[in-house]
Length: 379
Ligand SMILES: [Fe+2]
Image: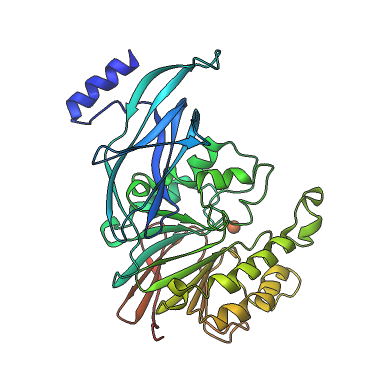
């Protein structure tokens, strides 16, 4: 009966296909110039695929098998820079897996057609919006997202602590991290930096399942859109004595040192090194804060990570975490480049065009709170 009603609704509204079994999505992540990864949640486990406008079906597989899951992730690769991909997410519900040799399937669902564009290093501009420290405030997050002009935006960036610490299941994480973005996430890539709260709880790998990013690691990577190269890093846990938290299961020192070794190499890659503008995105701002007790990690990163970022020519760092706004001109907190710390539950819009990087923050009511223009872009 439910399906009959949905089919009637689809016929009345002109929506193609049976979409009723999609719990949430799709959302696009892990975007580069040659690929995107498309994710969604289905109501029940089943086989899944992404259909492209030319009829190609890209199935979700693992080691030679189509797999039966609820949280789906399909990478579309071999794409051209700046190409528009027209896609829809589809699947078939698993109804009975009691006989492993003969699983039974039921409804086939087909999502609505969506369009997303791959990144293009040759593009003349780069425009993106940053969200951070939302801490489960879904109504405020929705209000900030609803103000985004998708036609004038290349991607969205979640700079951590979108959730508060907790032992989540995938549905809850998706509800807090992605659902408030509405349909934006189907047409704009959503990239992610982990906050300290996403690193807490007993299931930290689940966050990587909803933001899959394999190259080189789930939470640190580089990418480029137009003239701007980005390095995304993971600052780990900010708490005092962080290594003895979580009954000894936190080994963030090793993890951050691993990132420093990686970053040194990654920033020498031509796509990064040759970019006119370079931005570091990280939840934990690398500042030498005057509060020497509570800001141990920030200060450690300032000593150990900032020099190599400076050597690579970073023009700006965008941080979060502090739940206050800071715009630090070079030299303010031992920072050789400007650092903007976005306040909690605010949106930061960034736009680079013709040597000017414009940074503007907005509150939930859509009121502008800060705006500045940086002259950057010389090689
Ligand atoms: Fe936070």
